[in-house]
Length: 154
Image (tube, rainbow, N blue to C red; front, side):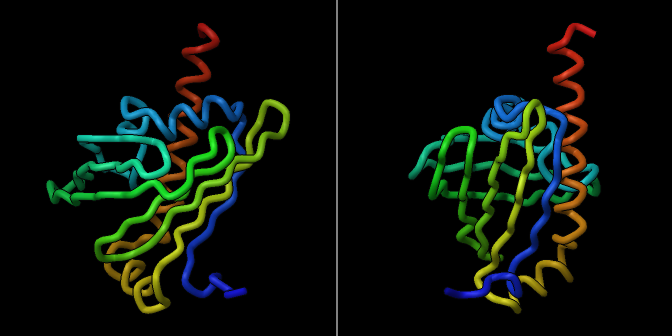
């Protein structure tokens, strides 16, 4: 079996939120548009079909006004467990998000798996994808906290 660690960026984080809420903010356009991407980015979502064979078509808007069109294909969708989606244009990579409930918390294991080591290195150099993933996970945390407060009526 291939060792993908050299061509991937991975991050594991425990969120103090139930798996159902994390699934909701990962798979619902009105939620994901507010947190997806590095700090300062916003999103316009044209289509989001969270199902195997479905597509996610959106544009990330950078803080400097640069637009980054994105188009993903969902390869695997297991509700409350796992999402695998493929970014087929350059840079080519898959995102694998796995969810593990731990009481009222959820462990999220996130991997960006690139088609090659050079693609990974170029994406880190050009787009700071490693820093972006950390920021993306932090923005997810902030989104979850807002929803937990709202859902608890505080």
